[in-house]
Image (cartoon, rainbow, N blue to C red; front, side, top):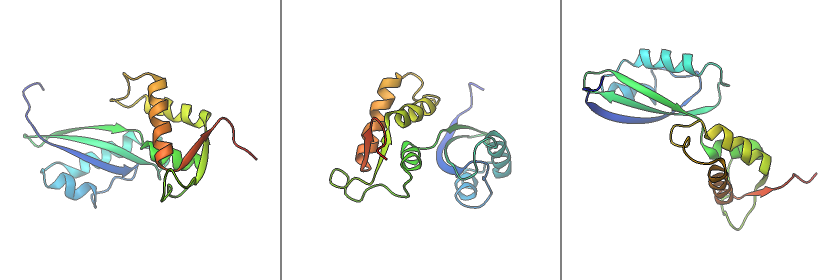
Length: 149
């Protein structure tokens, strides 16, 4: 394992349990001569417990011997914020136009999910929450203590 040379890092966003040989997966992996069907089968098996419309971030490490490994990350913060606020899109004029609200409880729950990501596991929950609140602001979503009826 230690002697394998990496030929590429491929970043993809694929719906949970929906990996197919078609775009974006096929062309991205095919140009590095990777086994597309093996990736699809493995990815779909590893994401079958997640709702099928959830976009998952995947980082595929391609090796020179045409083998590969991949890491699945949780969906983006903006995906979770839009879901929590019930939005399709963020604000066109963030900072000037508010398009929705989320509560601190939403922020905390998103942070708990993001904490499982490989790059976030060393961050404190507070640091992840602050980052998520910044993303919410940049999308025109207000963070409130509780939602007004």
